[in-house]
Amino acid sequence: MTQLQDAHLLVVGATGGLGSAIAHRLVKEGVRVSLSGRDEQKLSRLATDLGAAVVSTAAADLTVPGGPSAVAAALPQDVGIDGVVYAAGVVAFGSVAELDDETLDEVLLLNLVAPVRLMRELFPRLEPGSTVVHVSAVVAERPMKGMAAYSASKAALTNFSAAAHAELRRHKIRVLDVRPPHTETGLASHPVAGAAPRLGPGLDPDDVAARIVAAIASDETELPAAAFD
Ligand SMILES: NC(=O)c1ccc[n+]([C@@H]2O[C@H](COP(=O)([O-])OP(=O)(O)OC[C@H]3O[C@@H](n4cnc5c(N)ncnc54)[C@H](OP(=O)(O)O)[C@@H]3O)[C@@H](O)[C@H]2O)c1
Image (cartoon, rainbow, N blue to C red; front, side, top):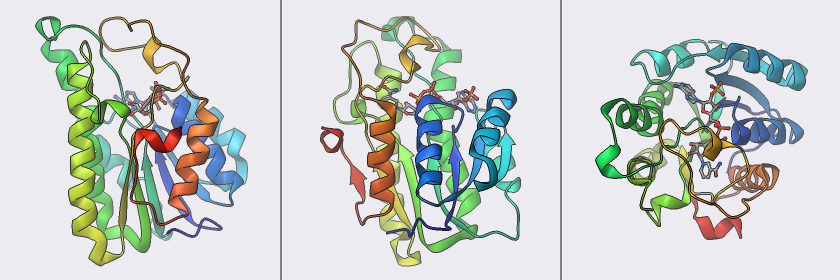
């Protein structure tokens, strides 16, 4: 359990549909936030919206090897870190036969490798009682045809989170894997490859964010897709 009032959490992917909803929800609960995204203009607009609750911002491309360490290094040294929410990610659609190297690299680097690198960088600075949230997805439980690389990236992140949770528990650090179903953020409308199949209506990003923030403040160690019903 992480006490939210006056805690300081880093939100990565804060410029996205889910990340920004989570950042807003955290601030509503009294959390001070550091924000990271790729798009500097979106990041600065979000920081303006959130006002005095923002501790720092860092724009970075997380698919390059130095990206995650640059985000970690941008956090002020004199402020403790009580948690991280990793909500950056991309999706790709299309058959395995059509999957090109560039797409495969981008999906795996952003959805899997970057959160692993970021955790390694931030671990020495995480306070006891911290929570690290990894936003995986329902496809980690139910992989989908036409989304093989995305499904694999999320399943691998979920497994990494479970192993890291077992390892870091003795440091009083919790790794919380969350696996939301389809959510209306617009993610599926800007894939890095292919085009989305017909998807039914998704969840409201504010509801998903509220459920994730409630889990940070509780003792839950994972939020399977069914937890969002
Ligand atoms: N929406 C869903 O249906 C759904 C369901 C389950 C899980 N998820 C997961 O939730 C997470 C957030 O997705 P979302 O729906 O909020 O999508 P989104 O609105 O497209 O947000 C994606 C975020 O990832 C960032 N990003 C993309 N490429 C990046 C890069 N190379 N380096 C650094 N940051 C990069 C974007 O930054 P900029 O905007 O600044 O470029 C943005 O902040 C993803 O991991 C996604 O897989 C989504």
